[in-house]
Image 1 (cartoon, rainbow, N blue to C red):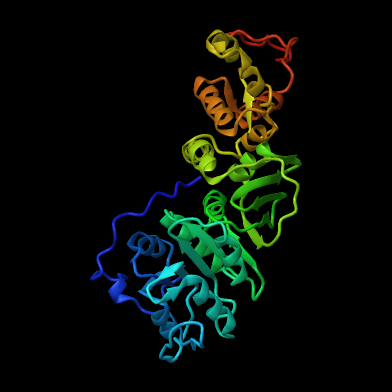
Image 2 (image 1 turned 180 degrees about the vertical axis):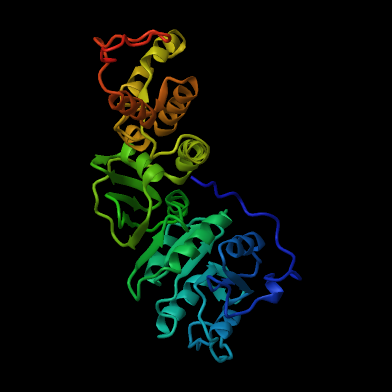
Length: 378
């Protein structure tokens, strides 16, 4: 999987696209409103990389002015401004604000018809037991606790940009939002729901910051989880809501980052530089006999799957070894000449068949021999 690194140092505000030069119409992905007394330059930079512009305001009143929302009696009076031509794709609000609190501000936005379905992400400096229920009660889309990974926030912004009407359903594609990055962001929050591939038989289930189950091509559990992240591709749908799926695993964000992501990154490197997943390989048994003494004993489990019909992808899906390990083994065997392209063997066989059967009973003439007069040359 593509590694999402921590954001770079804050951008220069004087540069095009910097905080002081933002067009509120937004970039290719729209714009995101950051509300809090502490600027988040790393988040702003990550949003720019995802195609969004960002606007920062320091409190609830300023946020309502930007959005053109009446404050009512919940927050200090705001002076309403004409709404911008386009609402932000996402509003990121600090739980503690200098002139109120983020939960109340979220409630005000939910009560306004124009902003009722605007995605809102609440960020708290420290976790409180009642915060999750309070965030759900005011209709927040997500609740995160510091320290917040800037790239996770940018991924959530990209996901929320694909909202399907007024439903809590979002459409995305692995080409623009890889499953590994999506899952990492989902596990940073507390929501529950599922991810379902549209063109492949795969699904992932998450609940309160944990991945709890996965299904892919008839497999379930951790094996399906790994293969879904390695091979799942195309359009998919994320649906938030109570997830009643009985769990077959329990994986948090820390385990994902420390144990799963390194193997996924290695797999992606092999996919880019190594054997094509669509390649069909077969075994050169003569070469295998030569190399066998230097190969591990369990390499037979990889070799036997290459019969000239299976692709590398099919072999990886059938092999019980971890995907990156099996991919590395196949690549090594190919470099040793033990595995060869099946098409070469097929071409060799076709050439042999086209030559016809050997002419065992046809005598060959000497180069200088001449047929006798009156006799047929045959």
